[in-house]
Image (cartoon, rainbow, N blue to C red; front, side):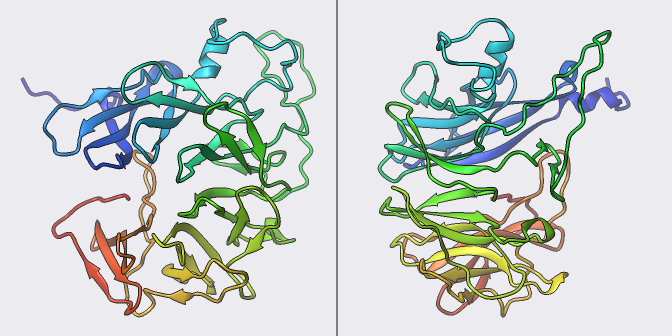
Length: 377
């Protein structure tokens, strides 16, 4: 019997996000986002489905809160993901590990950490115990290490959340930065996400970058020797939304800026070519400020490169998108063809989001999918 829709029907919406194909192409892992009305929020769990559609999806994690960012190991035997399940265990009075004697309120791990799930069966195990939440991760090509994004221990303790009836305490925050808060992340004025190298076998973490800048989106070079990341390391970082590509050796050392030039600019969403000779990215030299469009660029992995605008002759707006609270704003992630001759990406046209290809030598942009789709990566 049919009925009129109600507001409560919105709670039944379940949205697949963050889709990842296994290295051998046989399986797809994805996050399933659904509502948690009792928590006034969302839950996310991980699911696995055959890539050829020959079987139904199989649930991998319970997703009591949020299991996100699945990343296959290079050999496909392990799935790394981010989860705040450790915070759930702590809050419930039980934990999967004894607390070290030296672990204090100041030093205990952040709520969201990296977990590793063996794909041949077994429980997921916690890999990182960094002092703050982990916000991103990338496998090294040999599968022995992870590069993760996390802040150092807070310089200033968080004000405790008061319960009704508790006496008031000082909860004022002293702000000396313009960019002090992000939607969905909260206060960031006392946090600077940096890069860390984590040993997969033992879990030991080594801080790779430091400073007050936000270092994000690490991508390993094909030979595993260098890491390219996005950061705004300018003196007036709070006054601009600049972003450049930087390189650092995986063992540490000097940080080199790849994207040269003067003035405002934004480059990100980078991807190494299969032979490691190029880094492709989405970028904009902002000739007329924020009103100019993004294009696909490529740079040599060397200091202060001018770069080549590959899609500049096309009228396609690479990163134009309409965001929503349902599935988030699509991002034009880049994927190199195996022969290195072209780059694949998703971009909008006439209200849909389709798959495209751009030649790295001739700049020819070609549409690969027809019809009406919403391809997000």
